[in-house]
Amino acid sequence: MPSEPVPLAPRALMTWYLEAGVDETIGDAPVDRYAAAARAFAPLEASARPAPAQPAPVMTDRPQASLTPGPLMPEANKALQPAALAGNGKKDGLPPAGDEAVQSAYTLAEAAQSVAALRAALETFDGCALQKTATNLVFTDGSPEGQVVFVGEAPGAEEDRQGVPFVGPSGKLIDRMLESIGLDRTRVLITNTIFWRPPGNRSPTTQEIAICMPFLERLIELVDPKVLVAVGGPAASALLAQPQGITKLRGRWFSYETSRMVRPIPATAMFHPAYLLRSPAQKRDVWRDMLALRRKLDEES
Ligand code: URA
Image (cartoon, rainbow, N blue to C red):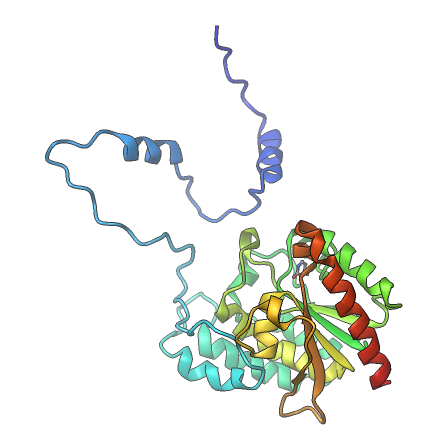
């Protein structure tokens, strides 16, 4: 005889959802997916015609950016913004969208004269929709005088909880990679292309990266490291402005420069530790890249 389903206590149910990866609330009203599925599989009436395909549900009522996807260049970034994002007006009660947000990010970031001031400026900034869903601002870890700035993609769940970049499994691997060439977090600065966790760990959008880029550029200017390292493909696209993917970019050196920097900085890219955790065979390439980083640092000293 089939047993009756045992009702879960609310707390146990929430824990079960969390463990299954459901860690965001994204709507005010519950959606009965069983009813929707039942409707979808119900036999069609003879006269019924299939409804035209609906666009994918949009999870926000903010106007969407019209930026063409593609690599962002540090300086070209500025040129990209106002025209490329034209048409995104501010809606009452919503954060400023598109060009306005980027413009306000540049104004705030450029006025900051220290990493602490830049962080304070970010705390006052309200131009990124991710702030609505994130728990904490995740800006930097390490030293503002770091010899290397590492730029990852986006904070994950653990980073969001602690407000510190790279503290989850990827962060633990980064620590071991640093240790392998005699570095640790007191000698480098670690950050991301965006400073708030995207819901459900989705990839950051081009617009979110564009909105955070003024702060990232200013951070790099203020730290003025000997070397810049993009960690993973999205960070490499955002910083190096190269059309190739990470497999072609890793192991090579580029120049990174903004108009306010006194000299260009050598910049490179390496595989993201999250990828290495899934594909340990690539660790050999990362070991080579870490040795190249060590050599570059020694040359620059
Ligand atoms: N992955 C990233 O790219 N950044 C983090 O801070 C954590 C995981």
